[in-house]
Amino acid sequence: MIKIFYAAVFILFLVGCSTRGIPGQLSQPPLPAHANQAVPDSGTYTHPTMRPYTVNGHTYHPTIVRKGDTFDGRASWYGPDFHGKLTSNGERYNMHAATAAHKTLPMNTIVQVTNKRNGKRTIVRINDRGPFVASRIIDLSKKAAKELDMISAGTADVHLEILGFAGKGVKRIPTVSALRSGPSEQIVSAFYIQIGAFRRFEGAAITQEKYDGKDGYETIIKDSEYNNERLFRVWIGKFKSEAEARDYIAKSPFEHAFIVRK
Image 1 (cartoon, rainbow, N blue to C red):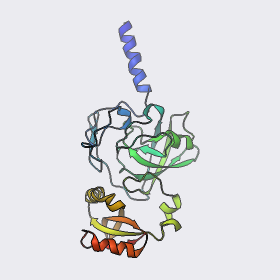
Image 2: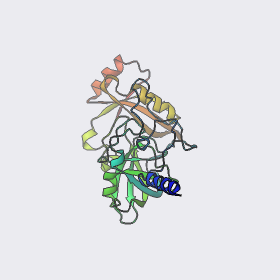
Image 3: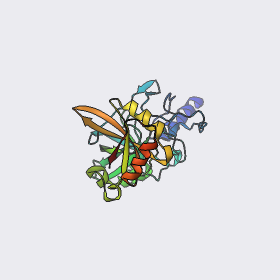
Image 4: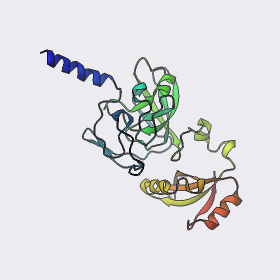
């Protein structure tokens, strides 16, 4: 009886240590921060895009969403126990950053989270997978949970709104005005080159990953509509002037590329 008692206490301790649920084997992308895995070798690490992955026997399929989409559910948060560990997109979890884990939203989705109880809001960037608990929709960083005043409660009913999408490798969240109203004064003069357009998000994601960082420029995916058909456009930039963008096209390998202004 004593052995059974201590075993039960140990199991309760494990469950209580995380608001994210008990971790399981994750096929793709790499294990989330709470799984306590070793850092993968840079030569074998594959950057996660929209690949399905499996945890505890359940397969999750990352889902394409649009700016303005909304969701309701229950939020939890994770903090010191996971600080510095690897997240699902290869970053180190920083509990002081405005980030969050979600089971199916694309990585780098920018989400506004509203605490339904008190009306407080925060904006986070998705960079991890979880929480793997059926009743929870999002796992917030400690910073985000503090802004929603839900640290002591541990969980809260929340409303999520998709504000936009950050480019691969971008860790700074754009301003709300830039996300909601389009270009701000800071980026009005930025020029990009469109290097591809795809009907499927997966094709755009592969192209973005392939060319991100090429010649020191970033790539972004623009969700758009053309002739009543949804298109995912891939842009590379940003160039300081139209002349710089034109010169880049002239010496680039991209066929049918053209300049766009953001």
